Image (tube, rainbow, N blue to C red; front, side, top):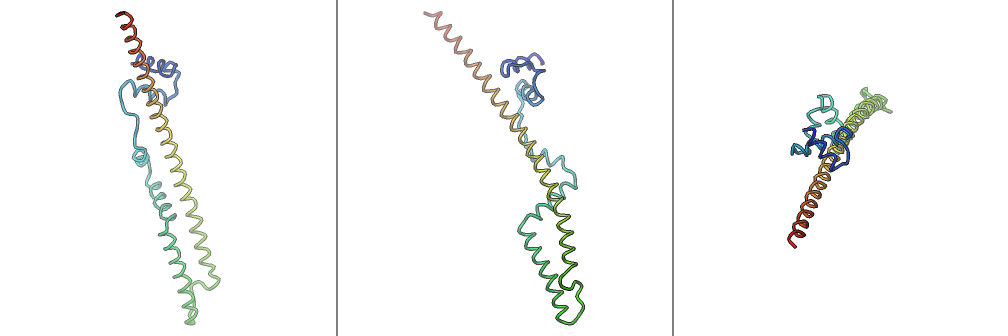
Amino acid sequence: MKKIWNRISRRTLGKNFEQLGDEEQQVVVSIAEGEAISQNTNDTFKDQMTFGEKAADKIAEFGGSWGFIGWFFLMLGLWIGSNLILIAQGKTAFDQPPFILLTMVLSVVAALQAPIIMMSQNRQSKKDRMNSQIHYEVSLKLELEVTRLHQKIESMRIKLEEQDDDDI
């Protein structure tokens, strides 16, 4: 099999198989074996994710949505409104203005939400790199296959011209 790999890599890339990088070797092997090289990176990436990573992505997805903003303003309104109503009724509010407890809760939410969103962005970046690598391999395979077809057509053209010359 290595002879076929070497022949394909020399004809298409001008290098021996051993001189190629990992991606190029994988492409040459896929050409020799007639295998597809493309894959669904979403499925591949999801299979590798841990429970914590999936949870962080869901939290980040909700934290960056209009639903979160609506829920957030509703909670703020309820918090401030209930405290002001208690004060207006002459009762002791659980968080008197200037709402120091609310400020602390908002700080904790922000402190937790920021790293979760960053973890999700890091995973998206990793997924994009994986996607880019697969796109490179598919493009390289297509280019090599077109080169091989071009070489075959050129070889056939030369043979036909030789036959035409022999007929004359």
